[in-house]
Image 1: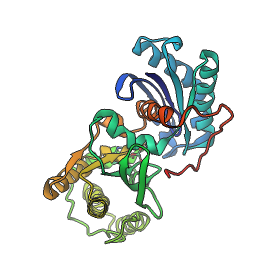
Image 2: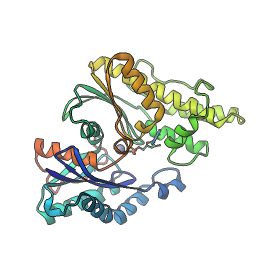
Image 3: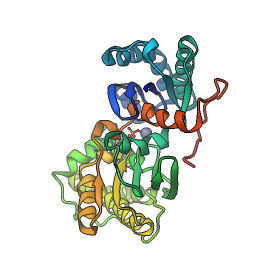
Image 4: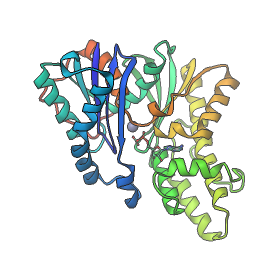
Length: 328
Ligand code: KG4
Ligand code: ZN
């Protein structure tokens, strides 16, 4: 089964062709980072307009790289939530138009489910139950995956997403956007034990980052001569400590056999290192998806659509977008 997936929920315009739910024939991602960087974050209207400009060439590239035409496809899928309303509408409209023209089924995909699916896409024999720490600029949640379509949300952030905390702290420190990769790099030159930033909500499956962000701001204002790399390293360690503690708790409470990371923050080198250490120390397997599958991409959308089309059938063409869509 050949599925074209389209992703436009935030600031990446992406299209991919996936065969049988796990062979990536093409995966094209056009990032809008440079457009949003001057604002220090994603500007919704700027994102929607950029998606309108980019969607047709990105889809054409994905079909071209896969060596297929519309006539070869079995379905067309797009993220229909959660995300920015205007941005989602661009991808969904394009997918529906192609489905109509090609007389193909349309599948609306939940972006959060797709992040969970990225694990299976790369490793179809990933054993369940597994515990996923899904950490991006918009979401931070712990999910128990008991099987395809069988998810339990165990905990989530009560305020900022982890990626949002990286971006806000980086902006405060004048390091640019997006903040995660810059802090990750700078942290390697700093002392992660230099500043004892707080670890919020110990012993709970929910997490919180807004107090940590405030603690960084207060510390830097009180110590203007502090070494910025030490702030980056100590802040990153506080985020990672909190996330890894929750993942350990989630794995224990669900008897998960494998630990999995997903979302853009899963690219963080310290989080990957500590997750691998946790898995080794507790005798569990670990799956750290390649970076291209951690950040937003359309291969995960096409793979999820393949499963959803078989399980639920096509999505009606009058189905809209749902910016606040939850996982379950
Ligand atoms: O999943 P994603 O591409 O987009 C959504 O938010 O859905 O995630 C982007 C987020 C940004 O907040 C970015 O700062 C963060 O992922 N990020 C990182 C790293 N690379 C990207 N955070 C920490 N360390 C990184 N290496
Ligand atoms: Zn995402």
